[in-house]
Image (cartoon, rainbow, N blue to C red; front, top):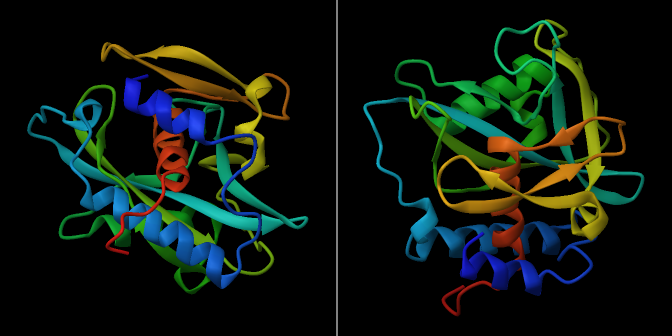
Length: 220
């Protein structure tokens, strides 16, 4: 974790910056994501890209049991790649397809959520997969109203909804080394025994939490 990340994490406090997905809260998230995109790319996000393909993932915010929550997936345990891992909906971009279109398409194909159910509120800097063969573009979406999921069981073992406040509990996170970048990032436990969020998913999640914790720039 870089010194700048340490400072942002310290400012998080004990609670998330939003407690509902009303219009004001969604606009706050939108502004803080946009502000982060306008600032200079932090040193730990300045990657040396190889010739690579493109992929996209969708961080989905929803409101469940009166709490702002994140919707994740546990991958099918029979998949050849990362079986049983926690992840966000996403996949490779098809030729000529934008990252936003990919994220929406994969969200529908994996979770059954149609495009009209997801409001895109921002994006973050792309990150490489472990082999550096893909630029992975994280999008952030909001799902209004009750969740009506139709899981693609060939890819998704189950959907997991965790309150945003869960990630602000020090008891659920531990610092781990991330690849060979000289960074330490949180890995998060869940309320499902043995199931945790780590690797690229944890890195993207942590970057998202840093961005929504940081105040927007004066230009907003």
